Image: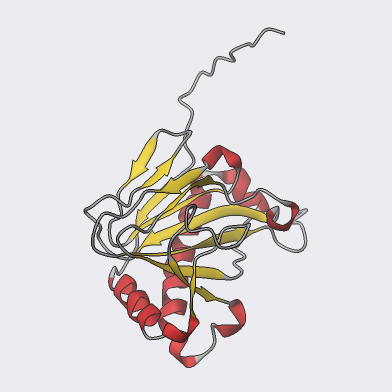
Length: 204
């Protein structure tokens, strides 16, 4: 066989949406929420379970059924801001807007990384039948980080240093494989999850 190169008349986009969430005080509220619920903290897992060589973090999982609890007000406020980012993302990609006009979000995580913490395993968010409903991944950095701890998108040759309030939305596919580099010092907080296909297709 012979490999062929297809020429494009436009610069290929990376499809990674980027915003500064407002107000950034939402980030402080989520960090406080995380620290107020130590009973719900668990060691971060990958698809195969616990593996500190691949991922080393402390996670708090938030489930949709919990969102109406009184102490989850900061989480609800954050989701309102995230949905605004999602709506702006859709304006950039009209076809996506036609198939995913609303964000469907399941369980998601607030995560804390201590010095030496990481998610060094290169991974994407849609790799099995169980995760095939995921369309987009999202993440907000909840504090500034100056000593390593960046997120690297492998195929895009892109590294992003954590900055309080910086929010990203990107395709969940293998094309956007990424990893979180080891944190050198301090602490790093993020909130991250996925946006899903609806249960019923939009055929209009």
